Image 1 (cartoon, rainbow, N blue to C red):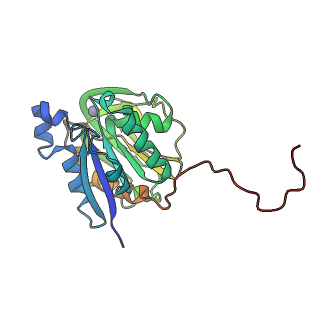
Image 2 (image 1 turned 90 degrees about the vertical axis):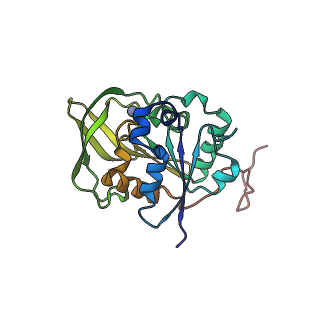
Image 3 (image 1 turned 180 degrees about the horizontal axis):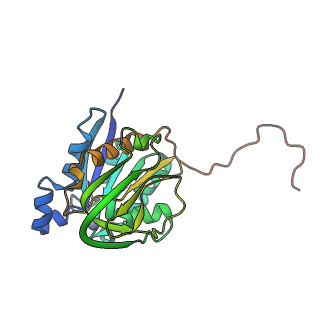
Length: 246
Ligand code: ZN
């Protein structure tokens, strides 16, 4: 079976400027995500980042070779060029998968695909998070326990301003009392989208084995089953039409 081609896109600014983030992610957030995917042999993984080149590492050629795009961004959403967002959106509509992580809830591409503000409540005190697996039969939840915990996380609370998801796979409870739809799916065109909330830059969340399993499952689930350009064609009739406009 051919491998699923994943591109892990990371803004890669925090790691360059903040020691606490370098300490948590010495190989970059993208590096930790890539490492987790490669724990199983189904994936071929490349990385891309905001300042990589003029196209943020997302040329037409790279996207043409990408089955699933992972997206981590936070402090520089506004610097992602609209023409690149257009390009990624088109590719998703044609069938590419998109996995948006944590603060990517405010990325241009996620808001474009969902059409809502994607706003939420937040609090950064390093509290405990308990993630409930509420759809254990869902492909993204396969092999995950009934619930699992992260000892330190950033709180993302409801209301999360998203359209009604196709599936809500995970719900999170935080030590401070809030709840959140932390794992949700959408479909746009032929493409599948998964948003997963855990992943704050100063906590080593992408080294957690349950989190890594979710990301591998998500990459498999979001991989294209069908790809086709959407063109709005004008078509001839299949049968002779007896009533015509005149
Ligand atoms: Zn965060």
